[in-house]
Length: 262
Image (cartoon, rainbow, N blue to C red; front, side):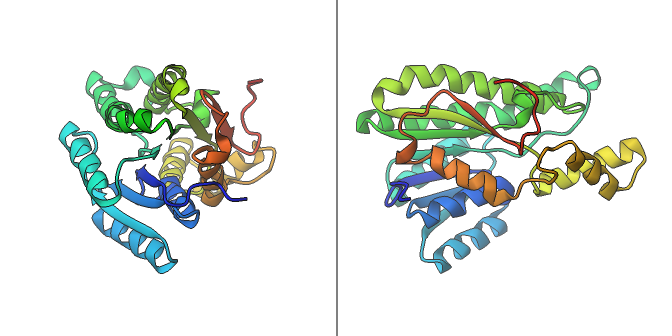
């Protein structure tokens, strides 16, 4: 299936590893021109080289998006290199684990600057051109926790939900302009982030890390963790021309792990 992304300008945040990197690769394979960003310049450079080696077109911008001026500089760099952003994938690393009652106010502020405010700032930059063109795709990577909060991940549970509320509200406002806004909630996926979470879980429970993995897999109907590519392929579809009537939705891709009806 041709997703209709050839020649589109895509901006992918949190692209140095994990799901962000997977989505960047998937979009590049579909012919999009991809600007990737994260804080780790070496990993971004390696990703761009990988995309170019496969015949794709990509560039990178290294920076911390929690700083408003970095968002402005990223947008300007994308505009100068590839033109206005038509496809935005908003993805961030996860905050530290911890229970709600143990977290200081500073931790909540830091998490908001990591997960929420950069998404709002990016949208404010890309929307004018999308509206002018009467076409755009915005997708935020959240988590299955927006359906079922995950124990000991209070910051992620709360801030991912905030992004979801922002996306749903925005989707109704920009739908008349041919712009879709959705969220994708990955389940337990084999990423560097998951390694850290399971190391923390194993330490708290006093069990080997592999035992923590097996216990989690036993609770997933498909009895395994997701591969990054399985999440990235769904993201590419939601960011494509083929998903033109899908907006205001959160699609959880979790192998059946969540028990929520909707």
